[in-house]
Length: 168
Image (cartoon, rainbow, N blue to C red; front, top):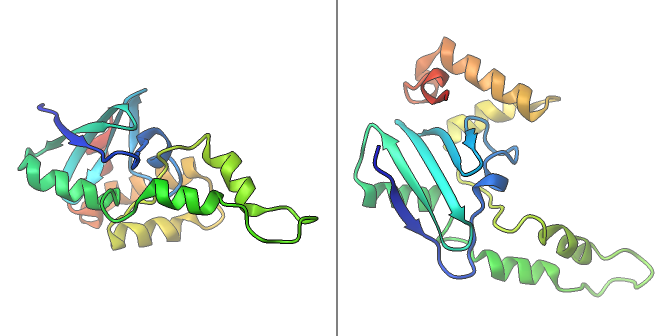
């Protein structure tokens, strides 16, 4: 299995450890501290990351053109459409509220320090819809199990890849 690097632009971090289990998507499985496996389109994807500021690596099954898949990953993680540092700076600027009331921007600043590289993903609409339906009054672990069982019952639900394809 060949891994291919994806460079991150300066100041536009991606942290897989925060993003993938954040409750946005439920088909990513953590294999070890640096490695995740999931499904994007018709590919089982393995991601590795050592430096959240500089890059991550990927491999796919079946193998595909690494340049084209790098672009797909950039879209999935919204690497080119959002300047994360600029947004964090904007959201961390104190607002002009009543000084006697809490400032939500300062609260964001305190929280953001501990979640550098957390990103919103651009998930496929049908998977997002199934995940949303399953998420009502549930927790991440239970939703992940429900999505996995849906994939086992109906392999075509998520591009013909049953959940067993991404197990360790």
